[in-house]
Picture (cartoon, rainbow, N blue to C red):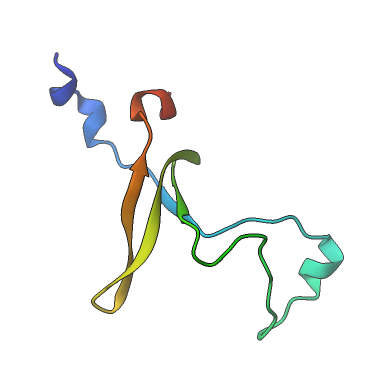
Length: 84
């Protein structure tokens, strides 16, 4: 069976676009309320990380698609090495 015809290509996997991440103390998380602002240690103009199955596969920029958000792919990794 050729890779292009592999049944694995029809599987659905979670795709996540991660804006940023940070660690917080539990007491600070418990104190969050509507209107709270959490600052992240990254510039607002940096590329966003694209994750598939919680593994980084590329980078992209946020774009508006109609009334929704989307992501423009700026860089993609060798997926064969990312998804094992």
